[in-house]
Length: 315
Image (cartoon, rainbow, N blue to C red; front, top):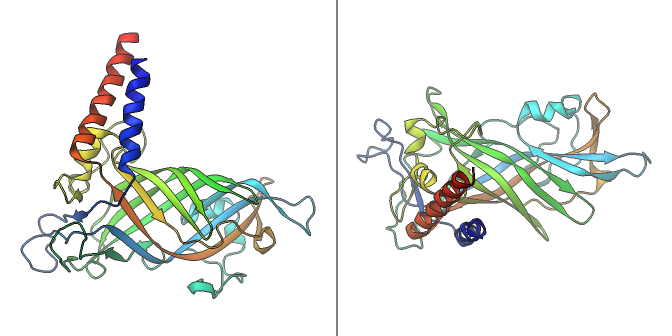
């Protein structure tokens, strides 16, 4: 019963955390005062905006009737070349894309170009409704530094539904010199929400980048990079207190239609008997984070500690 109560407490805290986008800021640290204002901190914002993200969706196909292919149940979405190639993308790279020219989608299948097709291009909005001062301080984001991402989403699909249940987004910092390049966050995908002309992806922020359960992956720069503007606490410190469920994530993909017509997909094979249909399109949207109130973080931390103590007693 105690374990059930602790789990319920953690679930309630996590659910309440997912309600609204939290105001955040980025601290680039010493030596990265790109706009000469005396610090390396951006203004307060709520979303990372992106336009022109090149998304490659790979659907397992049933081609028992070649003239009438059907979705066979699984889907992978990615912008990582090695993953794309594992499903036979290399064989169609450079060939005509049936949806090319729509919403800026390239006319031919291609690998994502950095940073235009795999980077966040805006900090939105810098005039924040949470009572913070209005600022246009981006520390020259997009000129002297940028955030890029690589991702894999895995899930299931049918003619009426699509659901992503696992995967990740790795977020990287780059400066214009190419000298500084490092991972600053990871989002573990936990679910998705299908809407009439959209698909939202949900996840949780973690600093266990390699997933081995040991906190030894993030650099000092990454640990101090993103902050909750309400408390000034870094995402890393919130994560170490509350665990992976402490900071939730939502990305609005604006993909339309979320479920494709199988006849519109280009067929590939993986060399091992798997047959897939590929759709490649550009997406515009936003990503946002939600940080719970400090009291909720503490409650969640206590719940996790309690679970650990109970487990030790049972052992």
